[in-house]
Amino acid sequence: MPSFGLLFYCLTFLTYFSVDSRSAVGHLRNIDSLIRAVEQVEDSNPGLSPLALIRALRRIAGHDDAMTVHFLGTSHLFDTAGLETAILNTSSFSFFDKALHHIVTDNGEEREGQGLDDFTEKISPKRRQLSRLILEPRDLQNEVMEILALVWKLERTEWIAFDTGISHSVKEGLKEFVHKYWECPQIIPRCQWGAKPHNGTPLPLSLPLDHLFVHHTYTPSAPCLTFSDCARDMRAMQRFHQDERGWRDIGYSFVVGSDGYVYEGAGWNTVGTHTRGQNSIGYGVSFIGNYTALLPSRHSMDLLRHQLVQCAVGGGRLVSNFTLKGHRQMVNYTTCPGDALFSEITKWDNFRQ
Image (cartoon, one colour):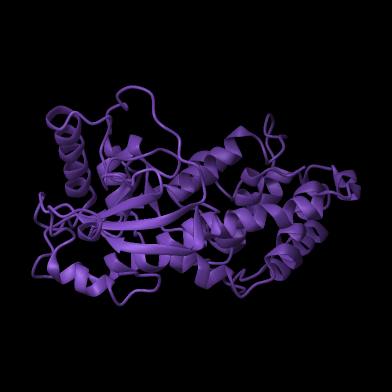
């Protein structure tokens, strides 16, 4: 059965040959033209190994940058001794993994990201929207099946196509792909912003929850505009919550930065410490900054209002008719999430007095 990883590889393969491919004979824009190109190369060069075939396709598509040559060799070389290997080996998957994390500097130099800050800041948080614009209009089910058929042909394993469960697995994998990469915003995991371990044993939530509580951090008071600043704020809040307040972890379930990312706090499955008396029935999501007089950016608010909520409901973590409230509605000792932000969320779907 094709795993989600193989499905992701197929979609990457499809996008890689569909975007920014320069060629003297035209662009490889879709799977049909890719298949035609494969047939033309094979007809002109009978007996090519899979690796040589891929090199020929790369030459047609104009993909001979330094990173591609490093992993797959120059496209101007056909078979040489020792290169008769299947294309879907560890090196090939490593190539596509590196392609996803590839960085082109302002000076046009190609390199991998140097550390988490560099890696995250160089990649646009809008790439999921761009991916959706490219792939959503297409018949992904059929195109993935056609790519798999091409892979099986290259590997001489066409017999796999007779497995009647393949199509169902692809369909289910696409559902997972759409939910994770299109419905959900990019959530920076704890390990990436440098979280310390949870103190004690995490308490599990009983899903789905029926409440969502909106906060602002107040301190830090300024919006964070870069990954490095937001990650630093996350670490500072965790230190304060653990060391000064004596809590198990950073209190919020998730935190929204002004850099285009959502940051994982306690997360989807663990009870947080955000809304006294209500922590086990709802998620607590905070915006970094003081929003007493000013609002977060529209994009930041949309990350919660539309994307994170859609992700939570679609993933079965939050009921569709959940109740949204501001922190101040649940306790009498705070003005959180600030007057300006509270006034804004009263206009959102699912808000309740």
